[in-house]
Image 1 (tube, rainbow, N blue to C red):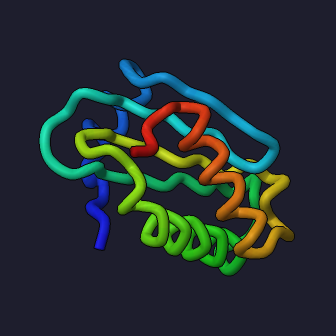
Image 2: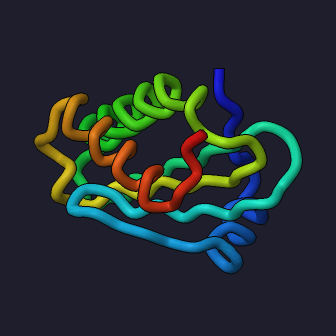
Length: 109
């Protein structure tokens, strides 16, 4: 099981000091050089859809991270932000977008 970013202060630190890259469906902020296992945070705004849609997207993102966490180098703080275009996508599309951004950031083992 992967570890989550908890407090707002942890999110703010990643937003302020991390690097961001984006594709059609997602934006990913990564802060490298921390100690311990990689930690993940998810952000799905109301622009994406109602609470049912937002929760569904969050579950897809969580599952993708769970699947790919073993491939990610340790010590990263990662925030994944869903864009409104991700609304009607299936798991394969979301997973592909997550992998694409992990590659762009160069944090795969």
